Image (cartoon, rainbow, N blue to C red):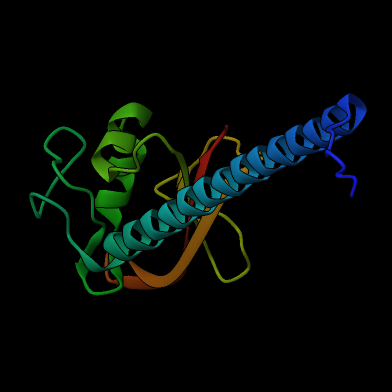
Amino acid sequence: MQTRKAQTLTPDFIISFVIFLAILTLSINLWNIANEKNTWVYDLEDMQLKARITADTFITRPGEPKDWNNETVVFIGFSDEDHILNKTKLISFKNLDYAKAKRLMNVGPNEFSLTITDKNNNIISLDGIALNFSTDYEGMDYIAHSSRLALINDSGNLTIAKVNFVVWRDI
């Protein structure tokens, strides 16, 4: 009776090793893509949450102190009553330095834009001051929008306003 011994051929070993390395490399790349997507989704959800909370704060809170101006403000809010915006606070905010406004709104590393428009999407002006606190975010990758309806109290005259708040980051 004759016994045969198994042999591993060098070409077979090299081919199987190359296939193993290809599968390993593909798996690592897919893992990195999945992690990057999860990070992107988390960042976008965080920005959306900040945009919603900040927009809600603008129209439902008076800020701190309640009669703040651009020099005394600690926390930004525009309303004296729920959904009724104070004209003086809006004008004071317009006069704030962008970096200070960003810090007070606590939007983190994100940039912001705040535009207050009428029912026809025209920017509202109070005492000749346009309520447009904006920098350009066109073409940015990470953008979160939040819009709220409110009233502006202009010396007893109430004007319907749309508060458009945008948070974005250029990555």
